[in-house]
Image (tube, rainbow, N blue to C red):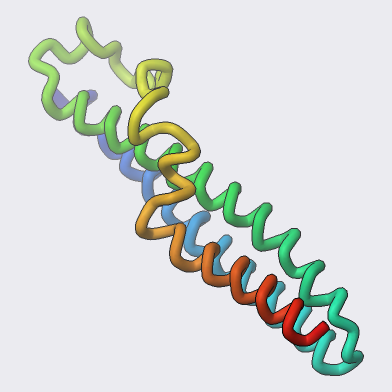
Length: 135
């Protein structure tokens, strides 16, 4: 039982780390977009607005990846909590995520998640519309 609790603590620390990474990525996204918009405001070159799309799309994918991994580890956590024969059904300290590939664990499902889609979609649409209006 003690090893099961330690295993759950390890997984919880991974989930926390994934969540922290996701939060930091959102911060970096806003920072980079703001910096590129400040460059546009200083120079008047609309190119900076369109260049801002590149980090937004990259960070959108990266943030979705971390959410996908977080979901997988949460599923593993739940499986360990619910397993009756810990040590036989799920090996002690096993971290295999192989069985979590489809459904909510898909990267595309993470990209359109309610926690990710609004921020990045609004940024992409705002940059595109703003870039064409200012052009």
